[in-house]
Image 1 (cartoon, rainbow, N blue to C red):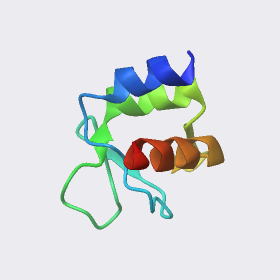
Image 2 (cartoon, rainbow, N blue to C red; image 1 turned 45 degrees about the vertical axis):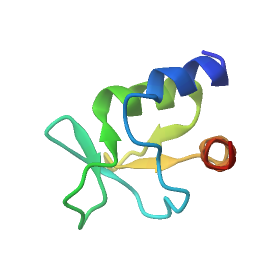
Image 3 (cartoon, helix red, strand yellow; image 1 turned 135 degrees about the vertical axis):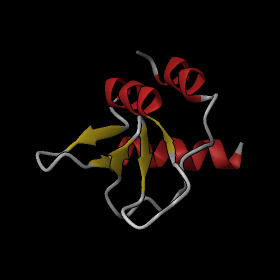
Image 4 (spheres, rainbow, N blue to C red; image 1 turned 60 degrees about the horizontal axis):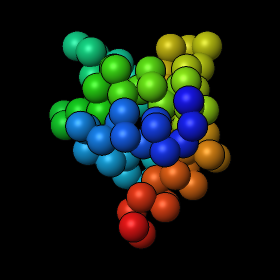
Length: 79
């Protein structure tokens, strides 16, 4: 999926924060910081971001933003 299409697919959820330095965990079809109570995005959005190359699912079951995802977050925040 091209980056523009993926960005549109992710639009219903809040934009990912620029500082995704910690891995995210999945709970109740949403992704959270390990100690967070507010969801970062939905599982659907995470799956679209994986398809777009913006997010990866690690072997330990946590999600991590990729360099491409970081750049996309920076571009969307400055737009």
